Image (tube, rainbow, N blue to C red; front, side, top):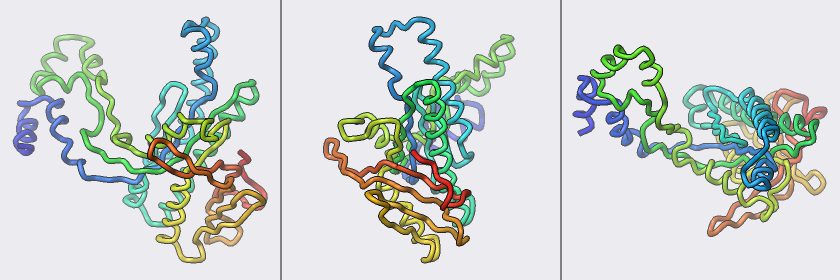
Length: 306
């Protein structure tokens, strides 16, 4: 059946829409490990609720400027092609495909790309908070989680032209001067990176339950499953002397990932003691990130204080 549909598509007897609808089985068993960052601006909706969703023009303008400033920072801190960014009003979601790294280079490059993801994620959070602090705004809260994504349907989006039979598209376009722009309009957004992405789901839930589970303030929170995953990757891909090291730093925990260079670490996290989160039947552990040490700065003299 699939072969027949593909043949009909090639023979222009089918619309692209139908071809995409029948293309989902190609991805139905493909599982990918995903890391997700969810960050949203604090206190953004309070004015809407207080005004019964009838903001004054100057309030709307302030909201738009606040979103644009934060989103500009997030967009500047994306690593293509390994990351994908989704903007949702006052929030941004970034997903990182670990398998894509392995497919594209060596283990060393994979590990470096993972470190770059964390560095850029922390920079995004830190820069937004620094900007908002200067203009007396509450900043952003960031959740970093891990899970899997199961792409199960067509890849990409559906445009208006996809609803037309392939051999009829040119006839329509040639008949109207503005038709090509109209035909390229996107009707359905379905990014494959977010299809049944459990990392995205977990980050969203953790952000939603918020202060009831001690996830509050303009801080960075990391799921401990992700820390354990990073430790496992290091033990699998790197020599033993480069495995993660854990030590106490006062009441906090310092987790370092060494480098092949003696004076550097690939990255390090100083986190609080983790605590358990319970939501329905789901249980997980999270910790607040106190400091982050990036791979390209001296460990002894530089860190992002969060």
